Amino acid sequence: MVGTTRAAGSRLAAGFDDPRLPLALAALVGATATVGSLYLSLGLELVPCELCWYQRILMYPLVVVLGVAAVERRASVWRTVLPLSVLGTGLAAYHSYLQATTVSCGFAGDCAAVLWRAPVLGLTVPNLSFVAFALVSGLVAAVAVASAEP
Image (cartoon, rainbow, N blue to C red; front, side, top):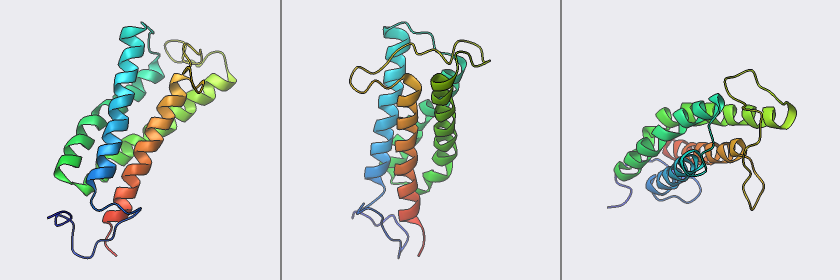
């Protein structure tokens, strides 16, 4: 029966019947970000800067963690995911700030350089990373709120 894995009396935010939908959506966002970053480096042969590597380190494991949590309907995964996704959001925001305001960043590689922009919205790679981390954080935060005891 759907929803029987939740504690009795737990409420749901945003109309989610169980945590599987938001966790699966968050896993999909993470998988899209992972495939996109691999395409940029392997397909377009763009060399990731040091800040890009840190963002990858934070995003890649989220795909597996969120995927398994979605299958198992494990709402408590927010305790693992939120520290990584919030840190990734902050790092991507800082990276985007560097691109918008400076020409060098002091890290290995040229992390302030804009090497690629999304054709439709004109977002840079750190901007897209920020969007992905923010979406994951928001979806998982909704799971955390929904699974909280009243």
